[in-house]
Image 1 (spheres, rainbow, N blue to C red):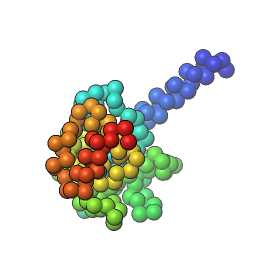
Image 2 (cartoon, rainbow, N blue to C red):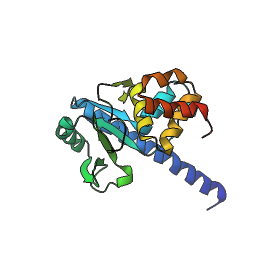
Image 3 (cartoon, one colour):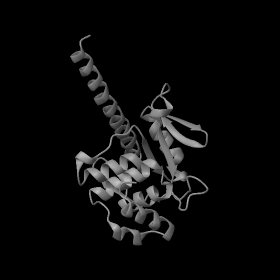
Length: 196
């Protein structure tokens, strides 16, 4: 195989990987929409959707697909998702839907439950499903709810996502007033130290 052919194969695989994640996301939300199950896309894909409203060149690709559900809707969501080819699994306290019986955990759609803390030490619970709006083809967490959840988990990737939102002026320093003092301080620190 020539270097040119090898480069083309690698590029094709990269494009295919992005396409697979997008297809998985759309299958999931179409199943939930069709079954009238309230949900919100959160985390990486919600950030990407919000960033795309300002600057599509600033959108980051990620394999992660996370959705927010009401715990009371899990059975209905499971029925809808299984009809679309997903398989419900619980692993290490995480609720997820594998993409088919041979689906890999890294390709799973992870579920967070509305109004519940993801971790006991977190300062705030996950948003409510009602704190969402339609962005293109799916319901996404509202920008304020998304920023609050990012400030709550505050992992490296969350700080990166928040910096992306700051850089394209999706959020500004006035947003600090919207959150409890501990979360506001985290956001202010990102404004004060944009390079990390």
